[in-house]
Amino acid sequence: MQGVTLVDHPLVQHKLTLMRDKTTSTAGFRQLLREIALLLTYEVTRDLKLTTKNIETPLSPMESPVLEGKKLVFASILRAGNGLLEGMLDLVPAARVAHIGIYRNPETLEAVEYYFKAPENLADRVVIVVDPMLATANSASAAIEKLKERGARDIRFVCLLAAPEGIERFQRAQPGIPIFTAAIDDYLNDHGYIVPGLGDAGDRLYGTK
Image 1: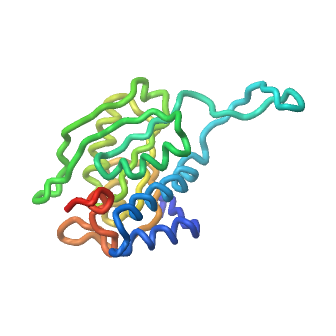
Image 2: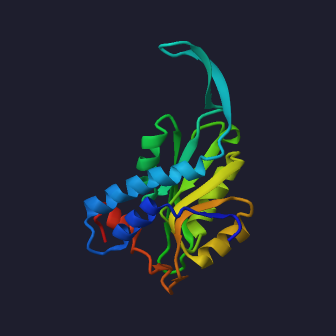
Image 3: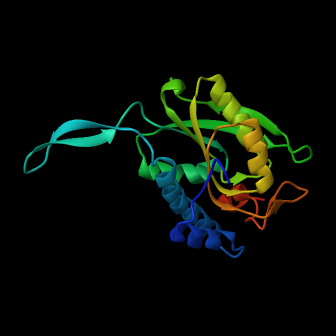
C-alpha cells in the first residue's frame, strides 16, 4: 500500500500478538506497547539527516556522525498515544513533546479537541504523530491539522494498528504524510473499532472501561 510502511519485524509481530490476547494484563499490555514503540521508532527515523562533528575517542580524534537540525518532536494524541510516547522517548530522550487532546464522539465518531500544547519552531523540526489506532482517521487528521496550523511541515504518523478504511480516509485528508504501522487489520466495524484489533487501546493501557 503506497505511503504505508508495514513494520513486519518478527519481534514486533510477536509482541503484537501478545497485546491482542484479551488475557494479557494491564501491566503486560503497557510494557509491550512501550517495547513495540521503541522498535517502530527505528523505522520512522531511518531517514533522518546526519552531519558530523569532531570528537576524541580514547585512542584518537575522529569525525563522527550526529543528527542534523533541531530536535525531533513526538506529538502524542491523548490519551493512548502516551503509551507509544514512553517507548519512543526511551530511544530519543532529547526529543520535544507535543500533547494533543482529542476524543472521538461515541455517536458521531467525529473528533472533539480539548487540549493542545506543542513546542515552538515546528516548521524546522521533524514531527512524529503517535496514536496506537488508525481507525476512522478523524482524530489523527484533526491532530495533524492543528500541527500544520502551528507551522509543522515534515510530519509522519505512527500507529500500532490500522484499518484499511482508516488508511484510505487518512490519505484522502492528509495526502503525502507517511504512515508507519505494525499491522493492517481486516476492517472497521459499525462502532468504529478495528477488527480483529485488540479492543480499546486506552482502556487496556490504563485499566479503565
